[in-house]
Image (tube, rainbow, N blue to C red; front, side, top):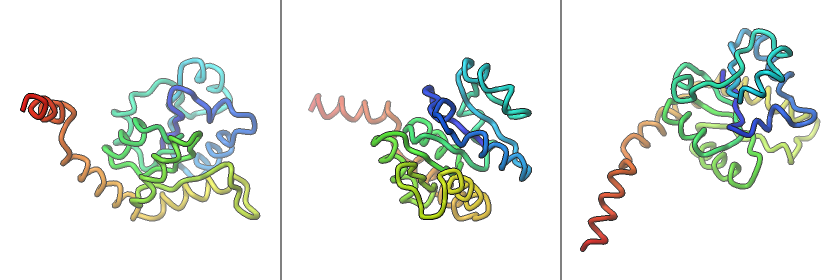
Length: 171
């Protein structure tokens, strides 16, 4: 399982962060956890996370080895994970991340946890942990992600789009 908050590492620095609880729960259930983070975050948090691998990780290389990714809703992160066929639990930290999260979740390839909308009787930590367990136990998330990856693979590349735009402009 991969956890990342992009280059901002908000999930690591937020007071009351559920990161430690999530890592403990997942590793307690036998999951291997990787945390993609800047070197400063690895230095600051590495010792408290035990055997968890934390630091700079090439997302496009690591993603295909993961069964689940938890992240902030960055478009590059989300699409790298989609292309690798990785289901996602997205905790958006802004409106843009929320739009990305809703699009991926709307296709059935992710779950979204909104920290600003608590669920009755459940803490955000519990909702995040339950979401991770749901994704890992229900193969439909992985199936939908693979379907989305196959559809994305049929789209034109940026270079192909540029050639088309140039042709249209020249006409």
